[in-house]
Structures are given as structure tokens and as C-alpha cells.
Length: 221
Picture 1 (cartoon, one colour):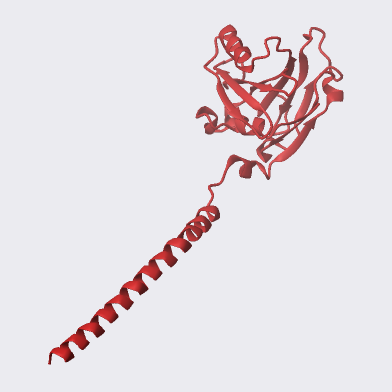
Picture 2 (spheres, helix red, strand yellow):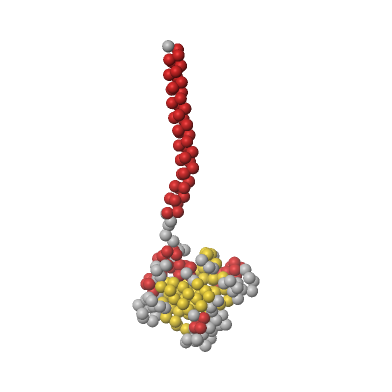
């Protein structure tokens, strides 16, 4: 009887050992493979970004020939603004008589095709930055104009600072200045204003249509 019990116990112990070993092997196989599963899940889900939104926007180039002072500037805009903006004046077209040395012209979007129905006005300036510090230039400009604290953001190619102030004289819309740091440390200054009905409500919450337009800038020196 004792021998039989011992043999049975040995068989039971052997079965338990096999089960434990199988569990250990399964655990290591699972741990080794599981990171790959997580990695695949992470890369397959991505939130839509502003760049995805602007992919279908219309491209426009403001040429250095027209501005007479700026490099070629290409940007995109939503179709709501029409196919092309209207060139109001530049150094070579309808040149005003009292322009400053840094003035590069301005264009206007007219969504209905009627002059004066201003969806968005964009005015360009090219300014030197003797200090060499982008932040100092922006801070001094904000103080001089009594504007809001700057918002900085990075596009694919440039550092940008935005300053805003409210103005009833600019078609009932707030005005935003954008300062773009160019590779040679000079500043492309862009003044924007327009009719609120074309600038959308999101123009008030820091993720504006104008911010997205500026984010598409490509500048060829």
C-alpha cells in the first residue's frame, strides 16, 4: 500500500511540475510578444492635425517681383475665401506714394467678389533685427504697440510669434500681427485683419484660421 501511494504521489508531483513549467513558458512567450502588439496599436491611431486640414486648401504665391522687397511667399487658404486674393497694392502695382522702406504690399480676400467685402487683409513688411534675438524683438514690439502677450508657435520651417489687439476701425475684427523669424535673422512681419463673419469663431480661441494660414508659409529667399 505504501509503495502504491508513493508512486501515485510521484505521478501527481510530475503532473504539477509539467503544469508549472507550461505556465512559466507561456508567461515568457506572452511578455516577449506583448510589446509588439502595443506598439502596433499605438502607431495605427493618430489624431487629425491642422496640417491634415490645410492639405486641401488653395495655394497662393505672392512673388518677390510684385513686392519688390520680399522673397517669394507661398501660403494656403480655405476655399471660403475664393480662388485667389486681390492684390491691392505693392511696390510694383498701385504703389502708394508714402510707403515706408520696410513695406512689402498687401492683398485682400474678397469672398463675394465685391471689392470692400473683406474676408481677410494681409499686409507684409520686411524688418531688420539688429539685436539678433527673436524674443527681444517680439517683446519690444508688443510693448510699443500695447498689444497682448505674444503667442509663440513653430511651423514646419519657422518660428512664429502672434500679437493681437481689438480694433473697430478694421472692419469689426480683431487685428493680429505675426512675426516670422527668417533664416538670416530678419523678420517677416504680417498684419492681418478682416470681417469676423469670414474669420470664424475659432479666431477667438488661440487656434484660429489665420494661425493655420500662417503655419502653411513657405518662403524662398
